[in-house]
Length: 131
Image 1 (cartoon, rainbow, N blue to C red):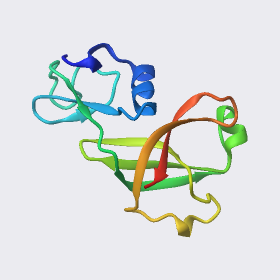
Image 2: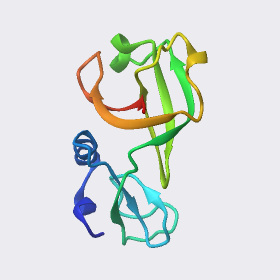
Image 3: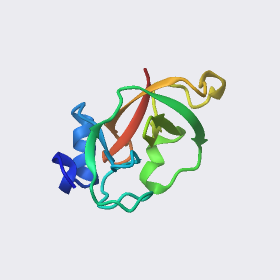
Image 4: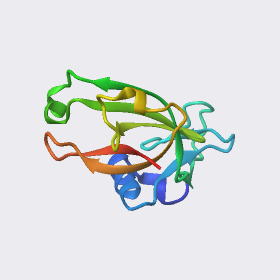
Protein backbone atom coordinates (compact mmCIF):
# COMPACT_ATOMS: atom_id res chain seq x y z
CA UNK A 1 0.00 0.00 0.00
CA UNK A 2 1.31 3.43 -0.81
CA UNK A 3 0.46 6.93 0.30
CA UNK A 4 -0.46 8.37 3.67
CA UNK A 5 -3.28 5.87 4.07
CA UNK A 6 -0.91 2.89 4.09
CA UNK A 7 -1.12 2.32 7.84
CA UNK A 8 -4.27 4.30 8.54
CA UNK A 9 -7.00 2.68 10.54
CA UNK A 10 -10.53 3.81 11.14
CA UNK A 11 -9.62 6.41 13.79
CA UNK A 12 -7.05 7.98 11.47
CA UNK A 13 -9.59 7.97 8.65
CA UNK A 14 -12.14 9.72 10.89
CA UNK A 15 -9.53 12.33 11.83
CA UNK A 16 -8.76 12.97 8.14
CA UNK A 17 -12.48 13.27 7.34
CA UNK A 18 -12.95 15.68 10.26
CA UNK A 19 -10.09 17.81 8.92
CA UNK A 20 -11.68 17.99 5.46
CA UNK A 21 -9.12 15.55 4.06
CA UNK A 22 -11.41 12.54 3.58
CA UNK A 23 -10.05 9.75 1.42
CA UNK A 24 -10.76 6.24 0.26
CA UNK A 25 -8.46 3.45 -0.83
CA UNK A 26 -8.33 2.45 -4.49
CA UNK A 27 -6.93 -0.69 -6.08
CA UNK A 28 -5.19 -0.68 -9.48
CA UNK A 29 -8.45 -2.04 -10.94
CA UNK A 30 -10.28 1.10 -9.73
CA UNK A 31 -12.21 -0.48 -6.87
CA UNK A 32 -12.74 1.78 -3.88
CA UNK A 33 -12.90 0.82 -0.21
CA UNK A 34 -12.53 2.53 3.13
CA UNK A 35 -9.86 2.07 5.79
CA UNK A 36 -8.79 0.03 7.52
CA UNK A 37 -8.03 -2.19 4.54
CA UNK A 38 -4.88 -3.95 3.51
CA UNK A 39 -6.45 -5.89 0.65
CA UNK A 40 -9.02 -4.81 -1.94
CA UNK A 41 -12.22 -6.75 -1.15
CA UNK A 42 -13.02 -6.98 -4.88
CA UNK A 43 -9.73 -7.80 -6.59
CA UNK A 44 -7.52 -9.05 -3.75
CA UNK A 45 -4.84 -6.49 -4.62
CA UNK A 46 -2.60 -5.23 -1.82
CA UNK A 47 -1.49 -2.21 -3.86
CA UNK A 48 -3.95 0.34 -2.50
CA UNK A 49 -3.53 4.09 -2.90
CA UNK A 50 -5.22 6.92 -1.04
CA UNK A 51 -7.56 8.95 -3.24
CA UNK A 52 -9.46 12.09 -2.20
CA UNK A 53 -13.06 11.52 -1.19
CA UNK A 54 -15.41 13.62 -3.32
CA UNK A 55 -16.77 16.60 -1.36
CA UNK A 56 -20.38 15.84 -2.28
CA UNK A 57 -22.23 12.54 -2.45
CA UNK A 58 -25.76 11.45 -3.27
CA UNK A 59 -28.23 10.10 -0.70
CA UNK A 60 -29.18 6.55 -1.72
CA UNK A 61 -31.30 5.31 1.18
CA UNK A 62 -32.16 6.05 4.79
CA UNK A 63 -34.11 4.83 7.78
CA UNK A 64 -35.35 6.61 10.89
CA UNK A 65 -34.27 4.99 14.13
CA UNK A 66 -36.75 5.37 16.98
CA UNK A 67 -35.50 2.49 19.16
CA UNK A 68 -31.72 2.89 19.36
CA UNK A 69 -28.93 0.84 20.82
CA UNK A 70 -27.71 2.15 24.20
CA UNK A 71 -24.84 4.01 22.48
CA UNK A 72 -27.41 6.23 20.72
CA UNK A 73 -30.08 6.57 23.46
CA UNK A 74 -29.96 10.37 23.65
CA UNK A 75 -29.70 10.75 19.86
CA UNK A 76 -33.05 9.14 19.00
CA UNK A 77 -34.91 9.65 16.85
CA UNK A 78 -32.21 9.98 14.20
CA UNK A 79 -31.72 9.15 10.54
CA UNK A 80 -29.17 6.56 9.45
CA UNK A 81 -28.31 6.98 5.77
CA UNK A 82 -26.12 5.62 3.00
CA UNK A 83 -24.67 8.00 0.42
CA UNK A 84 -22.80 7.31 -2.81
CA UNK A 85 -19.46 9.11 -3.03
CA UNK A 86 -18.36 7.68 -6.38
CA UNK A 87 -16.02 4.76 -5.76
CA UNK A 88 -17.34 4.24 -2.20
CA UNK A 89 -20.52 4.48 -0.17
CA UNK A 90 -20.60 5.98 3.30
CA UNK A 91 -23.00 5.13 6.07
CA UNK A 92 -23.63 7.84 8.62
CA UNK A 93 -26.16 9.76 10.65
CA UNK A 94 -28.03 12.25 8.47
CA UNK A 95 -28.26 15.55 10.35
CA UNK A 96 -29.72 18.87 9.31
CA UNK A 97 -33.06 17.21 8.56
CA UNK A 98 -36.12 16.52 10.71
CA UNK A 99 -36.24 12.78 11.43
CA UNK A 100 -39.99 13.09 12.05
CA UNK A 101 -40.61 14.59 8.58
CA UNK A 102 -39.26 11.90 6.26
CA UNK A 103 -41.13 13.39 3.31
CA UNK A 104 -38.61 16.24 3.59
CA UNK A 105 -35.73 13.83 2.99
CA UNK A 106 -35.23 13.24 -0.72
CA UNK A 107 -33.37 10.30 -2.20
CA UNK A 108 -30.82 11.69 -4.62
CA UNK A 109 -30.21 14.81 -2.54
CA UNK A 110 -26.63 16.07 -2.35
CA UNK A 111 -24.88 15.46 0.97
CA UNK A 112 -21.50 16.23 2.49
CA UNK A 113 -19.64 13.93 4.88
CA UNK A 114 -18.07 15.02 8.12
CA UNK A 115 -17.44 13.96 11.68
CA UNK A 116 -19.48 15.01 14.70
CA UNK A 117 -20.26 13.58 18.12
CA UNK A 118 -23.04 11.34 19.36
CA UNK A 119 -25.32 13.06 21.86
CA UNK A 120 -25.28 10.03 24.15
CA UNK A 121 -21.57 9.66 24.83
CA UNK A 122 -19.67 12.25 22.77
CA UNK A 123 -17.93 9.63 20.61
CA UNK A 124 -17.07 10.60 17.02
CA UNK A 125 -19.34 9.39 14.22
CA UNK A 126 -19.65 9.90 10.47
CA UNK A 127 -22.31 12.49 9.77
CA UNK A 128 -23.95 13.34 6.47
CA UNK A 129 -25.51 16.78 5.99
CA UNK A 130 -27.44 18.27 3.07
CA UNK A 131 -24.99 20.06 0.79
